[in-house]
Amino acid sequence: MEMEEKYLKPVTTPLHDFSGSPIRPKGMIELQIHADLGELQRSVMANFLVIDIPSAYNVILGRPSLNNLKAVVSTYHLKMKFPTERGIGEYIGDQLESRRCYVNALKETKKSKDILMLEVDNRSKEEETKRGKPVEELVPISLFNTDTSKKLFLGASL
Image 1 (cartoon, one colour):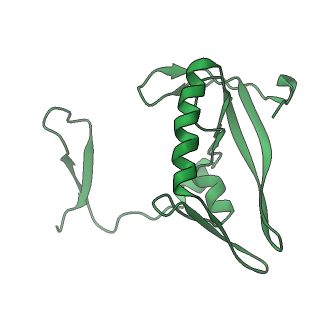
Image 2 (cartoon, helix red, strand yellow):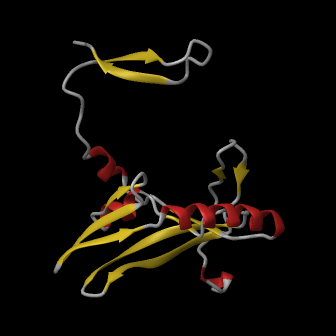
């Protein structure tokens, strides 16, 4: 995006990649997301963490922005639908092109450094507590005998 680093806000919390290794973000930036299909358009603001690692992705949208867009996403169908004032907007991906881009991106990340931006969930504690509560007691059930820290919670009446 060729933006100067002076626009990044400092971030002290490290991220962890899929292997569990810590990643130090370069900073955070607020950007406008604009879903535009001619007359069918919608815009929202989102905060992104900027990290300097090789990746097949330019940006990863998370639940906060998808929720703000009121978007419904199907990765299986490579589709995203979102409501607008004039109807339902729909992005449709091309599966063959998607695979080709992914393979090429993996090859390129081995050669050069890319910057990946991850969305930040900025919900307040107040918003977190607005979620519904279980109607009954929950019983923890270990998913794996070897790792008891991973649990599934089921209703006690089950």
